[in-house]
Length: 86
Image 1 (cartoon, one colour):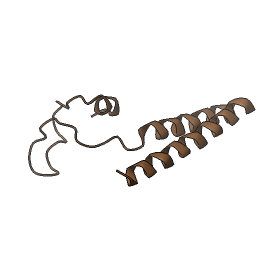
Image 2: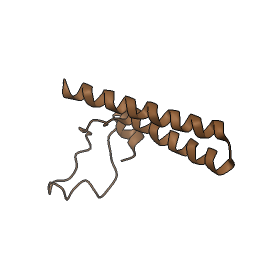
Image 3: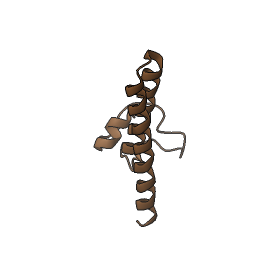
Image 4: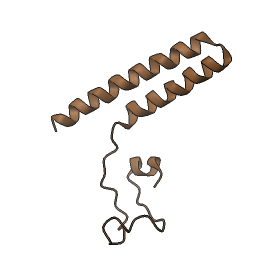
């Protein structure tokens, strides 16, 4: 299932892949939480910006990418701390 669908709580209706783990057919409900998605998205986006800045010689873009990665890492750490107290 695409991550965007899972985040919106949509049901998976595709074939294959749902069975096999438990031996039962997947019923279409999504029960897993989205682990640290906002922080991870920002981190990955920052890596892309840093790589683009590095490839083009744009130091501002490279620095912005590094800052986005750091912010994403901080968000993920905060989300992990919140999970501990749930």
